[in-house]
Length: 140
Image (spheres, rainbow, N blue to C red):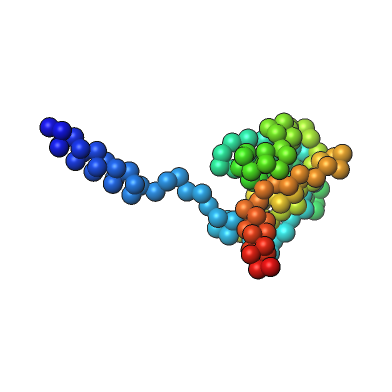
């Protein structure tokens, strides 16, 4: 009986190990580093959750029409290490975001920097800028 239980647990371990974990996409999978965006607008909602915090914004386009943007930030722990709290950006705030647009051209972006209306700049913990910084450090 004990041998069967051990065999069952080992088999379950192999099955669980072979199931892919919830996918964490790399920057290049969704965003285009050649499509820089500069967005100024009003925050409508903030999702402070793993794997990425998300800021939803209302931004006027070139024609003066309101467009809704979804802006991905780094994860909450990465943001905390850069001085953020869950209250750093909240609904109603006027912000400017510099980052990169989604490859599919939709109104989604990966933020590099978030600038508050008082001029304070917050590093958005982008996976692209982090990878670039690590690559630059390793070549010097």
